[in-house]
Amino acid sequence: MDFSIFLLIIAAVVVFLGLKSFKVVQQQEAFVVERWGQFHTVLEPGLRFLIPVMDKLAYRHSLKEIPLDVPSQVCITRDNTQLTVDGVLYFQVTDPELASYGSSNYILAITQLAQTTLRSVIGRMELDKTFEERDDINRIVVAALDEAAVSWGVKVLRYEIKDLVPPQEILRSMQQQITAEREKRARIAESEGRKIEQINLADGQRQAEIKKSEGDAQASVNESNGDKVAQINRAEGEAHALLLVAEATAKSINLIAEAVRQPGGMEAVNLKVAEQYVEQFGKLAQESTTLIMPSNVADIGSLVSAGMHIVQGQKTTSSIQS
Image 1 (tube, rainbow, N blue to C red):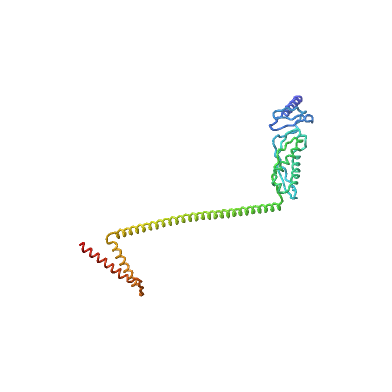
Image 2 (image 1 turned 135 degrees about the vertical axis):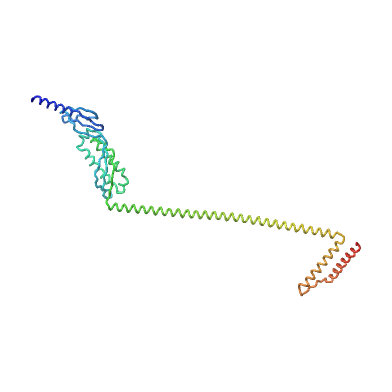
């Protein structure tokens, strides 16, 4: 009875050890195995077998990219300004053996090195540069960490600053500076707008004056052309009128000359002249109390008698013809 129980115990131990000898390694994981206290091998993903008692699963490592939060710390800039800085670090285990034996705690080592490197980088910069050159700070920290982490079996991928917090006094002065800068830009923009407006108004007025002067010049040209045309038309009208008068005068003279050449024409002319002479002399006596007598007043009687003689001659001719 006691022997059977012993056998059962031995069988249970064997089964237990057999079950413990098989290990399933997940994807993106690495198991470090020690044999008799020394590094033996790194188990890759899949079903793996360990020799009981001899082999020991010493370390387990994840080969995935791991984010590590770097605690915030106070850094002093080149111009003696305190900044509270925190960030996040991304790393990956590339060599499980070195990650197991290269450092007692590679996570703590990376965190401490990130903090000291960050303090050193910010200490060489002024306050304004720390906000402007975040990418440079991140790149310098990654380069320093990656160089040191090679012996720890770790690859530092990137580092990102999450917050840069200056003291409240600096924040207030920065806010005032930003407000003043914005007001300055607003005033500059407003003045530029007024300047452009004045330029546009002056240019518009200049264009309007140019257009007006061109219109006045065109109107003057048109008016002068109109006056010229009117003068030409008037001159042509006057010339035509003079021509018509001259033609009428010539025609009347020709008619008179033709009438004079007719029988009794000369006598008619003399009679007409005598009548007009008497008529004009009578008007002169009526219009003025002072009568100016011509020197040949005696000719008046002869003219009158000549006229009467012509009339009587005309009457006698008329009676004979009848």
